[in-house]
Length: 173
Image 1: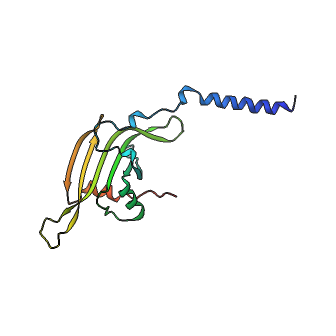
Image 2: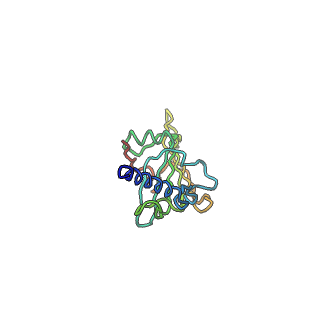
Image 3: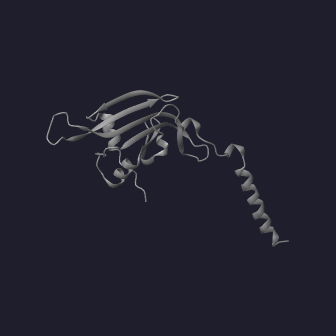
């Protein structure tokens, strides 16, 4: 009897742990308020992560995603001169407490999605040979569902484009 007592305790603890996992309050679910909805040019959540940060003063968190060209550039260069065909998307969420992990925050409601596309344009002045210069296309989507609230095309980086291009990539082991 005394030899089977430790085994009985272990089995009882295993059953208790399994029943805790089946608690309906802890069943995994999709964080729908954090998922993009609306007419976006692309789903940035299908791209790779370049960087992320938390803005404590606004209680938001953001992740910078990029297409393959942008990610390859970000991980192998320290500059901000992304090559043509690079696409970046900054997704910003409000923060909310994680109900499963004390002290942690997770994305709450999706606040905005910003897209920046890098391409090349011919230099406006005729030169021989023709010179290509970087040009930028920017779009900002906000609301629920997400709708276009700002858009521009330019060969000059504004402050927002400069900010997105200057975000340093996260280091991956």
